Structures are given as structure tokens and as C-alpha cells.
Length: 85
Image (tube, rainbow, N blue to C red):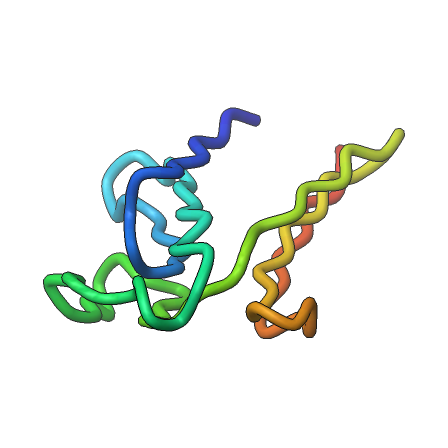
């Protein structure tokens, strides 16, 4: 029940460490023009990998937490929800 949100990356991703199960989310660049520099997608870690601009929203609810990556226009391009219990 621990998640890492990273803001200093210029691409969006959701990674899960194979040994620990730690979930990490990168917010991404604020614009498409500033996106870049990714070392590339690694299928061993990445559930989602996108070299474009956008933002991340997180909704903490009573029985779940919802992570959503959006593009620069607000359209959801990826979502991941964890339900309690």
C-alpha cells in the first residue's frame, strides 16, 4: 500500500519493480514539446510508458486509489486502480 509519484521525468510511465512490487508513476512533461529523454520502455518494469506531455491525477477513495495519466488536453490515456482489501 505504498506508491511513488515522480515529477522530474520528461515522459509518463507506470513501473512495477519485479522483486518488490513497488509501483512508481511519473507525471511527465507539461507539454509534448518538452517530452523526451526516456531510456526506453522496459517490459520487465513498465506497465505503461509514453514519451508525450500530460499530467497525472490521483483520486484517493474510501476503498480504492485511482491513478490516471492524461495527455496535454486532459484525455485519459492510462489508468490503474487498486482496491482495498
